[in-house]
Image 1 (cartoon, rainbow, N blue to C red):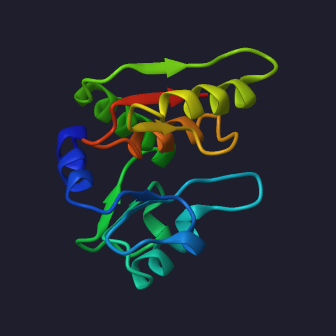
Image 2 (image 1 turned 120 degrees about the vertical axis):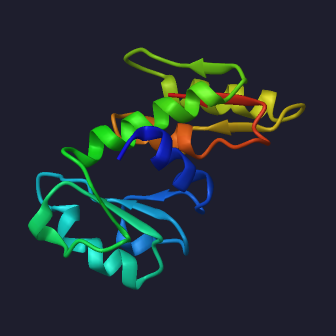
Length: 149
């Protein structure tokens, strides 16, 4: 599926989810893999709990239905969607990098800027290859400034 089509589905959804324990109705579930889990195995559970679509990268993990989006790599598709979404936003994004103090600095900046602006910032320290896309995808038309750690 082309990213533009997935983006249309995203705009018509309640957002994205990567954990079936935190499914929100009408979300798009991305079946990510980790050292001790394979999200593809939870695709049907995500649909049963109210996900609108599931993005999987293993064809045998879930029978192909209208709710299934098969791709070569679910994580890369999540990252591509976040990049596409970022390019649609006409807002400043502050990106914090470094070895130490990012989370504290992000929280301080967020506290100050939130006094005047609608700010969307990384939750906690979700500052990795999964957390950054999730942070970007949580930004919406009401977001005036984004802070990404």
